[in-house]
Image 1: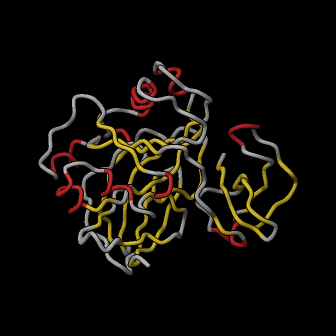
Image 2: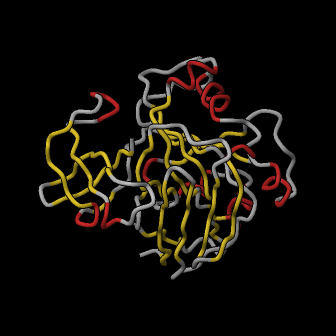
Length: 263
């Protein structure tokens, strides 16, 4: 199931996106769900809209966004960094999240902002702590696309990553949550203005998804709606105002955002 959060004439709702995955927006519909689907399950209200007639929003509210660095060997190599012996974690604030077609805003403090296409994992379990691999897999609600936008020059100069990763708009998520696990051979792709910049596969991660969720759960309690970004492949590169950044993950969907100067 594809679960979206969307704005319509009557307000904001969650809904199930219906139709063939490769169909255009004009061929898809969204069926409204009652309440928060990860809390109450799938309960249809009977209301439906054409997907083209609603606006997709960020698909989840996250109390925290836990991110993994250097989880693709080629990405570590392009920065001259060693592959970590265990997952390398950092956090993004929830205020960094934007949805499909939201604007990535370039902060005045940075002169080198870069894209990072990633598979994002959405937690569905309540109070997930100290999970083994099986428990970690069971705690996952679904998957979406993410862009771990990074001010690379600030990351280098600060010596730690909070400012570089934490600006408003630096965590696009969407377009929806897919509740089925993706094929490990699924392609992770980033295009800037239709030019391919990143291209890899989920199976190329150093630490796989259950390992990451289990590892994080031994450090902090995971809550419904929390998001785990699983690392980016090689090919990260600068983005500038006017660019269109497209993150696509096979079997999940496509996340499109435009880059603009900060207000």
